[in-house]
Amino acid sequence: MITNDRQYRNTKIAVGEFEGALDRLEIVEAARPAELRRVMREAIESQLEELREQVTEYEALRSGKVRVLELDSLQALPDALIRARIASGLTQKKLAAQLGLKEQQIQRYEATHYAGVSLDRIHAVAEALGITIRERLTLPSAGGS
Image (cartoon, rainbow, N blue to C red; front, side, top):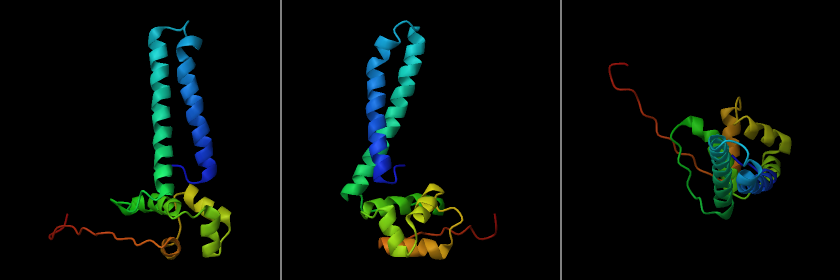
């Protein structure tokens, strides 16, 4: 996942480099067996597709096209918080300032997907982002497991 403009720029550069590698593959690797070139092409195409998806997601979040993020578990909450920050137009630095923290702290939170962060801090981040989190609890059936 792309979490900031620097990563976005670097990912865009990587997309261009992978596209160039794909274009050059048949010429540069012509002496290699066709099967090896096919495997190399598939690997490059797979990586390129993943990078393009990340760029597309980041651009959609930044442009305001995404208004709701669906969570299927609490484990999805950290990534949703990162996406919500991007969609709100806040940089890590601006979010940190709103929370009275250093930018590096937000960078650490996001790099570790908020591992070990208190529920109070998660709540403060959500408030600073102006988001509402709704999660449904499904109880086990009566009578045990």
